Image 1 (spheres, rainbow, N blue to C red):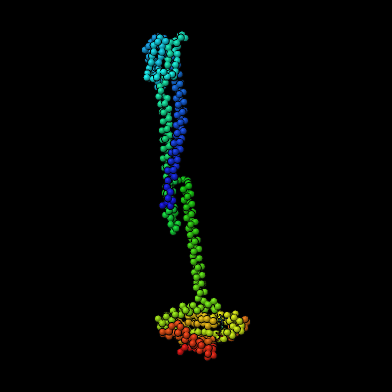
Image 2 (cartoon, rainbow, N blue to C red; image 1 turned 90 degrees about the vertical axis):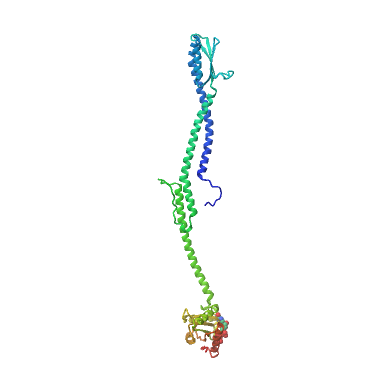
Length: 414
Ligand SMILES: Nc1nc2c(ncn2[C@@H]2O[C@H](COP(=O)(O)OP(=O)(O)OP(=O)(O)O)[C@@H](O)[C@H]2O)c(=O)[nH]1
């Protein structure tokens, strides 16, 4: 179907891949940014919470320590340690007592997050010291929790976006384009009027696919008219060519000076005429015509005058034939051969006599002068087993006889 053999990949797949790459890049940047922001925010939140705890708990601890109520102090220390932000709590009373709660395994050599002096209820002298350690995983947990929430939302959004884009591309671009490609591949020159119909959901607007469809229809219409023009041009050229071939053929069988057939036609057509007359037992006669004293005209009035006489005699002979059955050819020089199918000797000799009288009766116009003209005729009918050469020899002998008998006469082979 596709002529281009390079690997095919749909636009939808490429676009979705690009979206995924872009979304991945954005996600990384967002992770770093969001992680940093959450980290900062958690830190502030924790500072604030610890400050509040310390501020709120100090008065109660002060009273409890002053009143020497170790259970109450321990309870308060336990409550403080139960807060999510606090990892460990220690109260060092000025009496030397220590109250602890929380992750006791924590490394106490590390600095506590907050160390606060617990003042006496009335006096200035402190009654003890409150030490608070932050829960070590709390901050990381907060950062992870916040960031994961955002990542999950972002991934979900990207997946939904890809699904939506993929679905729209498949419906609005991929399927119509596949239909157009299939239509173009299957379209044949003789089916150019077949319209491109796409299966698409109804829309209240036009899009690029509609423009392609319209362009296709325009292209088909242009191609149709172009082919029609080509057909017309080919028909015209064929006609011209046929006319030219006809003309070339006519010229190849015509004597240029007289318009009669040339010698070639005698050689090609006379054997066929004789064969036909023999097959159907029909008569066939020939007449040799030779202008008398033509050399005198040529020598006296010039070659051009001689040509003019030949043209006139040729036209006269052509005009008197029973076309298209009879035909006349220039045999050579001032000699013509008339072939008369379906004519016996009697009919041929009458025709020869008629032509002789006409030539004698019509002097030829040469350079304003009337030149009297006569011709001699030799007539022969084709014998049952006679060939072209013998027939022409007999007719030629009759022509010679007419010349020797004084010219301007018809000699018939008996
Ligand atoms: N003008 C012209 N003359 C031609 C053409 N072909 C042959 N001739 C001339 O025709 C003349 C024929 O002369 P001849 O064969 O002696 O015949 P003729 O003078 O007619 O004498 P007879 O036939 O015996 O009556 C020659 O002078 C040729 O040169 C041609 O195409 N045009």
